Image (cartoon, rainbow over all chains, first blue to last red; front, side):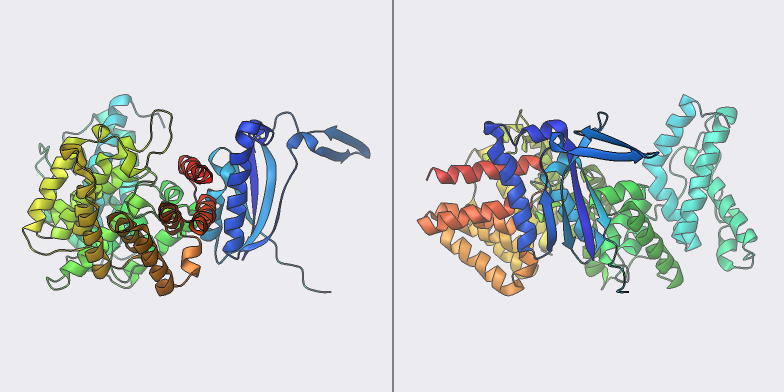
Length: 120
Length: 423
């Protein structure tokens, strides 16, 4: 079964990527985690994302467009990336979620992927 | 409905903490239906919280709760029109009437029967520990699920299915025949041990285990040992958990960094606890019925002795004990630990050979995500020290880091890996 793992963490965590003293461990931990999933043969796809400030939010309400640079001000945890994995059951997906570096400071959401709609 | 006052809440909580398991075991044994007994008992606790503020806390809260729960079960039976069911009549008050001023436990302890039911061969091994935690200790499904890294909804479903199975297939609430006792006891002990290790990072010697359910596991191990005084393995499990518990305070330093066993400051270990465990193990040995838990306890006792002797870790003896353990109970965890012990006692390359033999034996797929195998391999390759082995060690550390969920352990492994660069 396919599950998406969505990684969220507090804003300060993203600063580690830019800090020379912490960058090696930060990226090393994520690379090791992604590598372990790849080696386990479960990785379908995934991406890390540029930091939250680099995002742009688009909304349309009553015909009016609203564009905002960066995340909503009241968001505590920001999206850092996602993977889609193929594992036998939810329990396995939860185990992999627990291993993500961000899980011990942020949160990881595990969602079953909708099956592809039948061909028309 | 008014809120219970402080005295009521305290009395109810104390009764729950001390007596929930005994109350449930007694009811479940006689009613042959764990789920119904749980519901009846929950209602009894709710009505205690409602009534005791008015009537005062009874002299024997346990007897009060028992009477209320039995009444609930009988009401349920009438509602379901099963009044003619012999089980219902057995539960009628004539079986015993506790004297109104009894303060001690007013009914027999049937928890051993409950433990054996939870670990019955027909019960899925994955649900035995959760079932024990819920019935003997009264833990809720959400807490159990979180500790085991399982969806709470799924855990609740599995528990309901297990209890239904017990009722429908008529699994008997009784202690096994003498000939079956050692095997059935082993299943109970394994389920209790699983509560201590929680399978977190799969580490066999719980140096990196989560501490969520350790108190509960020790309580159950103590209970099992006291209810099964003839079973040396029950004593072995208790000794094992006490020895691991004795070292728990030294696993992290003042900054929260992880400290591996060989580097721990023995002065921070709980010496009275080690001595108590040693005594338990010594008395168990007198029964001359060795087993895997006694062996594991003996290994941990050997690790702990430097607290008293100041001597180096007796790796040769430990390697030998692991050899006996894997012959008796060849789990992957024990085989990894054996390899490390041989690596320390003999040579790193001999240890590595054992890790490779393990991989050949169980195949690579189960090991791909088994963190301790990669940690052991990285450690021994680093000790072996040739250029190719160091490169391989780096790859193994990387994999181990990717498989670790505790941040303190992850940092420790990253540090070990960075120290390789300087070789």
